[in-house]
Length: 382
Ligand SMILES: C[S@@+](CC[C@H](N)C(=O)[O-])C[C@H]1O[C@@H](n2cnc3c(N)ncnc32)[C@H](O)[C@@H]1O
Image (tube, rainbow, N blue to C red; front, side):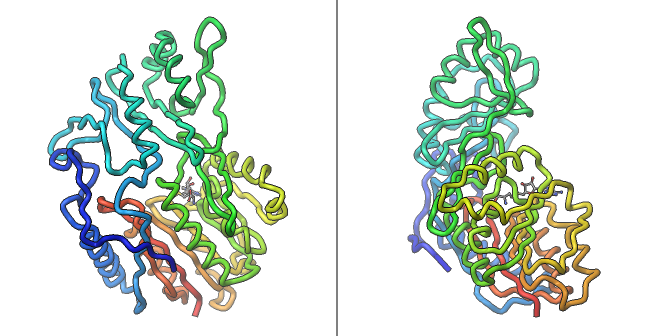
């Protein structure tokens, strides 16, 4: 496994530490944060009677400045995150969570004076440095913005704009702004072996938070899938294909199961424009759309491995078909990645009762300075 050596005594300075709720661990050294998260995960394993005698690895891409997307609240002219002690927005002009590219985008973006009292704003930068913004405002405010014209005209020179829950794209028809359908663009990337792969999605799509930390994720997933060459995989929560593509590089096949139609449109586009050296992998991918926390009809005995990256609520009924199989018919391995260890433990306890044992476990610290962390686990059938 890969670990980046970092100064364990380093502390990240932030002028907003006393008031901003975004980072909870700024008062601790990075070494202390590592110990705290590792200790918390060990406790969770113990509390759920999950056996693991190995080491919990700690993978880090840095103690700060990792994020390439961040969601801000805009309330009465203040743009930032909620305060620690009250419901007020802390107006942030710098943030130690943001990558240098995202920080300079925020600095530019803050020059705009918004004629809107309340809304949510996501800023994002792509791997090539393209700037994006998602303005999630009430319909009445969207209309006011389209009518006002000047803000959108100026913003469009800087960035790609998406508006509202339906991710519509504003365009100028010569007389007025209109909204057109969402547009797929390259906002993130992943890796197939040594080759970076552009991922098509929307500014508003779910992606992992950091392009830099995602290199470690792709590396880990690839290493685990590679250790079962030619595996037939079923994947829960493929989204735009961030783990699907690293897995596809060496797997025999991947059945990507996902609920979100827009993410799947992105995945389909990505696969349709793979570079010539990777094109042959496209035929190994099948996509299956549905709510697989409710029910899945697939016969799990047809798969060698499962790759799961569920939402905070965990896998729920996706695991039911395993219960119905004889132990020897169950897939040989299970790769589980989660940003919500509590639900992961519930699923892992169930997997343990189905005969799986943890082989390797790692914290991927893609939310340094906060209480949050990603967990990656490889389980194998006894
Ligand atoms: C944590 S994200 C992971 C996405 C992707 N693996 C990545 O790394 O970008 C969880 C994914 O699970 C999907 N999802 C949520 N609920 C689902 C459900 N009930 N059935 C299938 N997929 C679901 C979400 O749409 C999202 O794409």
